[in-house]
Structure formats: structure tokens, C-alpha cells
Length: 633
Image (cartoon, rainbow, N blue to C red; front, side):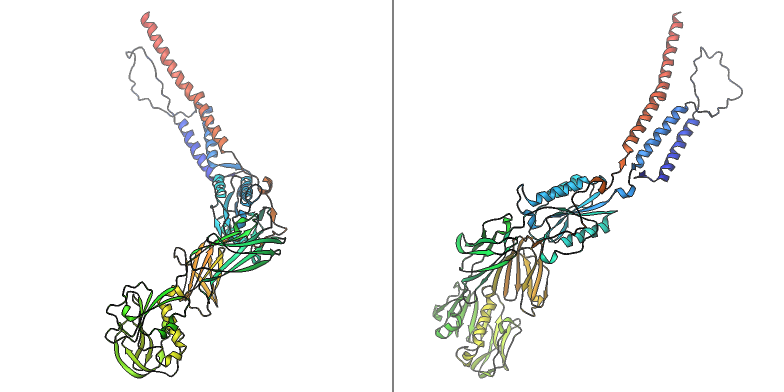
């Protein structure tokens, strides 16, 4: 026997105080009677005042006893007595519900998730009513669905709202979370219960299990073939060509024959027949030519019990070439610089046909200055001093190009040795302008960030000894890349699953020049170790990794079913236990005690309080009748 709300000392103290008060009321009760007399003529005033004394004898002892017993029963009900177990009968349990991607696999009656929810619900309802339960949803992350809760309806609702996720199960992390929750929040730790199939990664299949772990196993098929990863990259030699890599894995225990088909914009784009050994992963390669934007779909035929990884869709952007208009009266030399790049659509016009409103991405002005500057980004080659956008200080002959400025993207990778220009303009860059190449007299090439962006070259690149230098085409490529980085960015697309993603970056990449953002442009934290960038995405979506001139888009929409099924050690308890194994539920007596106390007070009123009032009313009626008879006589 123990009490929930009051200790035994508190109960005895309150009961003693109330009992003393009730007894005192009975002892201090004054006896006052109403006496009927015929007339006041025979009433004489006494010389000595009558002294009233308190009654020392209880007039109705059985009423007092009944009231004391009834009040004692009500106090016992308020204290909350219960029989059985004491503190040992109330425990706090954690139910880990497997909400990984594999729980969406089909069964004959529905999904694996339905069976796991039902097993967890049966376990919770088998517990004593005073045991609290926390429901935790577990996939790549452990997410509490409820605190430690007594209300079984709240727990049932949390189970019902749980749905399969998109990532594999990290069971070790979920169990560690449950242990921490019991240490920090539980009054007395109960069991940690796992309900699910338990498909995990190969490196997470073995870990130490706690002594209070219980498993509610869910049987499932092992056979599944799914898309593991899809990668797309534009060919370096042909910007219209996409190189496509598709990885497919057989998760089952039997060989499987499948058909891997690709579609772009609803039209067939490739197909291959594959035979996969048990547990094997194979990669198929395709090429597809397009500059248009569209949707690429990869599909596995036939479907199996887990169709979620049999199909993947990736959106491909359009490849727009850079439109460059060259105004020159001698365009032959410039054709080699601009027309040879497959990502540049070069158009050549005479300088007399210059149009400041021309719809070009970049305009090249060869040795002339138009009356109105172009609205687009522009490259000025040896412009007249009077019309140069960056002032020309002087023109010199026999100028030696002494250094390139690698601190800007325009001068990256440029090297020359003992290069002397027959004639060159010495520029006078303004504040904010970017020097690119310099002589001892001043800048020979300078840029202005704009908008619009402007680059002024103070000499003719192909009209001097520089036409034999490798730096000449590299300089042109740097300028075009600086003006239109989106056109020349190395672009890749990958489809994978949520979780930890590893990305290869250039060795020594500066984290300050790297950005990892979601489709809403929200930044994601990342780390760089060597030439590997690592970030974690917990929800399906698109993540962009921008590292210098390289952009990789990750479409994290493929589910990860896990590689192997975790096997619980032999000493781990399994299944739903009997009530005796869980703990005997405590029996509450307070409702019956409260009922008995109320009945006792009601009986006291009926037996003693009501009869006294009835006698007084009867005496009054008898007196009236007697008076009426006397008057009549």
C-alpha cells in the first residue's frame, strides 16, 4: 500500500486536525430549548444571573463516529492510495518506430509501416496504465513524436501519423537517442522497444545493444532491385552532348534480369538489359544529344515490392550558347579566338554596322570607338584614346609586358616570358578598375566590373608577337568566362538519396569560395577534407554545390532502402510480453473510498440531522393543534 498524493505523516496530521475540530464542535455545543408557557404573569426575574455551562457529554456519539469515519475515508481518497508495486510499478519506455524508406514496401495487406504501427500500438496498450511512453520516429535521424506520455490516445495518434521517409535507417543513433532521453527525462527507465524491419547500411549493421532493448520484428521480403544513383555531365568536347551514368543495385538474394530504360521529354533516349547478381551493383552509361531543357526519366522494368526506387526524374536545363558580336574591319584574325569555341556563337560585322542596341551577350570593338557605347558587356581592342571607356594615358612603342595579375579571374593561369609589344596603349585605370596585365609604365589590360562589364586591351593581341603565345587564347577564354560565368561553368546533375553526400572538389579548394544551398537558396553547412566536400541533407529536395567554375546539382529524391537487415543479438527480448513480465498494475482505491465517505455523510444527515429537524417541525405542529383545541373548548 502506498499513497500518490500524500505521505503517511501528512495524512495522519490532516486527519488529526480535522477530527479534533469536529469533536470540539460537538463538545462546545450549547443546549438551547424553546419553552412554551401560558403567560408571562408567573415569570419572575431571578436575582442571581444564571450561569450557562458547556456540556461535557456528547449528545449524539454515533453521529460523531459516523462523521469522523466518513471524513477519514474522504481524506484517504484524497491521498490516492493504491495497492501493488510502489515505485517499481511505474516506468518510462521509449518506442522506436522504423520510419525508413524500406517501410514503404508493399505487403499482401498494405505496407510494412502498417504492421510496425500495429505492433507498437499493441505493445503500448499492454503496458500498465501508469507507464509513460515516448514515441520516436527513426530513419537517418531520430525524431521524437511525443514526450513521455500517459495518454494512450495521444500515442496512438502519433503512431498513426508516422509515414515512411526517404532515407535508410540509422538504428544505432536512434537507440543512443532513446538512452539519453531515459537518462535525462525518465523517472524510472523502462524498455527501449524497436518496431520495424531494421534495414541499415552495411557499416551500421553491428553495434552494442543496451540490456533493456526489446525488438518487435516485422517480417519482409529481401528481394528488391532499385536505382542507386544517376549522374549527368555535359561533354567537355561537345556542349550539346550529355554523358549519363546510371547505377543499379540488386538488394536481394537471387539473380535478377531487368530492363533499364531512359526517356527525355517523353521520347525514348536509351535502353539496356542488365543481369544483376545478388548484392551486386552495376553501372550503365548512355549518351544523349540536346541543348533544350527537359525532363530525363530513368525506369526499371519490371517493378517489385518496393517500387519507390524503380523510377527517377531529373530536370535538365537548356544549354544556351554565348552570343558574341564582333565589329571589325579585319575579322579574319579574330575568328580564331571567338569562332573556335563550341560554347560561343560568334557573329562578325563591319564596324560601320555597329548597333548599340544589338541583342548580343558580348560585343567586341576592334580598334574603333562608336559614338554610343554598347549596352551589353564589351571588349575594346586598342580603342582610340578619345573614345576609350578606360582612359588612355599614352601610346608607346617597344613596350615590354612584365607581369600578369593572377589575383583576379581575368589573369588566372596566364604566363609569358620576355614578351615585347611593338606598340601599346598605357591605360590609367580608375578607382575600382581591375588591372590584368602591366608594364613598367602602367596597365596594358584593365577591366571594369560594371554593369555592363568592360575590358580594354591596349594592344592588338594577334597583331604582335603575342599571337604565338598560349596566353592569347587563354586570355580570351578568361574574359568570356568572367563576363558570362554561367555559360562556361562545368555543370553536373546527380540523383541520389537524402543523408550524407560526398562531393569531389579541387585539391586545396578554399571554403570561402564554396557555397552549398538548397532550392530555396538557404545555405547548408558543409566540411572540406582534402578534395572531398561533405554535407548532410535530411529531407528530399535539390541541393546546389557551387565551387569556383564548377556547379553540381543534387536531386535528392531517390529513396535509400538500406543494404542489409540488422539482426538482433540472441539475448535481446522479442515480441509483446505478457502483463506479468511488464509489471503488475497498481490497484487504485480512491474512487471506492470517496464513495464510502460520501455515503457515510449522507447517512449521518438522514439518521441524525434530518430526524432532529423533523422532531422540531412535529413539535411546532403539535403545539398549534393543542392551542386550537383549547380555544375551541
